[in-house]
Amino acid sequence: MPELPEVETVRRGLNRVTLHQAIVGGEVLLARTVAHPPSADAFWAGLRQTHLVEWQRRGKYLLGQLANEADQPAGYLGVHLRMTGQLLWVDPTEPVQTHCRVRLFLEGNRELRYVDQRTFGRLWWVPPGQDPASVMTGLQSLGPEPFDDAFSPAYLKERLARSQRPIKNALLDQALVAGIGNIYADEALFLSGLRPTTLAHSISLPRLKKLHQAIRDVLTTSIESGGTTFSDYRDIYGTNGNYGGVAWVYDREGQPCRACQSPIHRLKLAGRSAHYCHQCQR
Image (cartoon, rainbow, N blue to C red; front, side, top):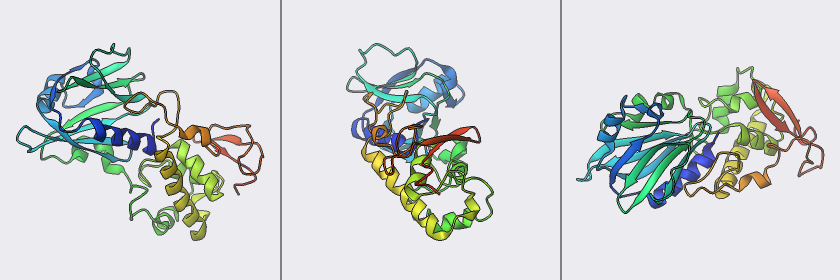
């Protein structure tokens, strides 16, 4: 699943190419991809002849702020890529991908396509005057962004003080911190020297300070690399990310640790894989 760096990479790409161009039409090829409104006709009625002012990100969600022809607010276009979703900026003459679910036609003869093999992703039109969280209900439970001031070592200490979960599981909880998934939890735990099985409540404040900095460092590095290459992630031009080639532990089971040369181990925690170095992480 795309995590914060991948979604942020898509957001930045969309802000470079899609702004201030009228949405002149479109096509919904799979009805259930549109989560709101309940019909494709209502979805297009909300979007038609609006233009995108800015794309924002909240956790793993994308929010495209819309304006009408008079530059008055016209709501939001919301997107969640989920497991296999892609937003691709293409020439309309390009053959439609097998798993294309929604097409947006923009003036200037360009097209934004939503492609999703496993069909878990969703799109929303949020009417003007409504809080996006009232329509995109997943936004309601998100914790602070990793780069916000509200996300601090003291915040982590307070939130984890009574947690009996392994720290890896805690980091995957979007109510604790928004946007982190399996890849960057593994990477941040390696950089902070914590094993994924360490119980969250047992971690001292000095070690939480290291974890806090490691989370920000690994996310920054991955954003600069355009995200991590995996089977379905692409940026808006269809290009893979570059972070995977320099990952410390993620998806490197049996390979030598880049720091100490010990083999990387993998275990299962709550049904998810966790990768770690038994020498570097304690």
